[in-house]
Image 1: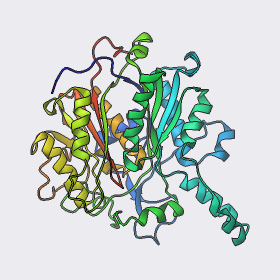
Image 2: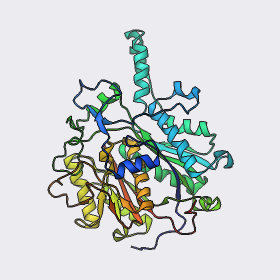
Image 3: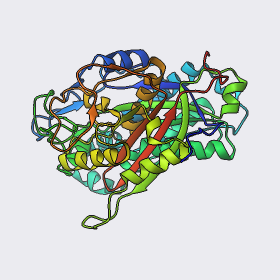
Image 4: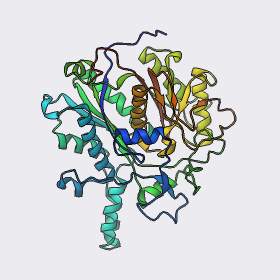
Length: 416
């Protein structure tokens, strides 16, 4: 495999973050490096009657900066996307009005599909009587609401799209954004925010029987740990600005790094004797980036916190890099799994790792499960030379995605 990196890769020039551990880039990053655990009892509603009572909520989120007309027609996850998109544009120092029509697009991902909005509507209808609730069962929520609202608010007339591949969707949105850049756009807002912390959404999540039922935030979500017992959900994510190399260079934009490789696979049916698709996704993403395993400096793992899924992911990483062959981290252990918002947030953390040459820790994990054989970064951040990062994401149902990020090449506006 060639180790010469392809030139002209898309550049990440801006990011906006809304996370349980921070409402902007630097507050999120400082909390992540400090190993802050934001998992706590749910405040959005009374969860004490449910088996799972903990989650990663975004504290003190204030959407008051959004136009008043948007508030009645949006839910919390959409407002988070709007705020994060505005922050990404400001961080990139880009005025959408300066971009020619049809040359700026939006591609996001969604998993929750408006549970919180639906909860609000159901409560309204229930107050009018059971007959109205019965009639309301035909309610359908469009997954594309985040994308459409972002486009409308900023006057973007390029392509609009939404990817729905559960927890892998955040990386698949990046892959689709790259396709859009290769066709006819030069700038794309991409990534995702997600969340469904409401009774209706909570019941739907509990039904999968994969969530942790522990009440101790420090022992509930433990990816790769011998005591792993399920995951905890969260809300939030990141919206990223991705530009063609030519567009970024033309306006002298600062680059956090490049999207150098992407791949997605699907697992075979349950009970099949065929191997899962995660290792193949890793191999394909590395090949797409024209780098070999030895070039990768750190892996941001999916970290399901479910023993059999952790073992499968660890085996795929070990097969590519060897036992303890590459540092691995799961910063989402401090935020919970944000569904489609998780991988864009990991991507933002990976780009900040490249910027600051440090690997953030995996919080709470103290004792790796037997057979994991990963060099998992725990307890404290680890300084390292970081030029190439692999980010992994999986979605329940068999989705696997991998992205390779690399440091921006010189001459591509790294100074901003």
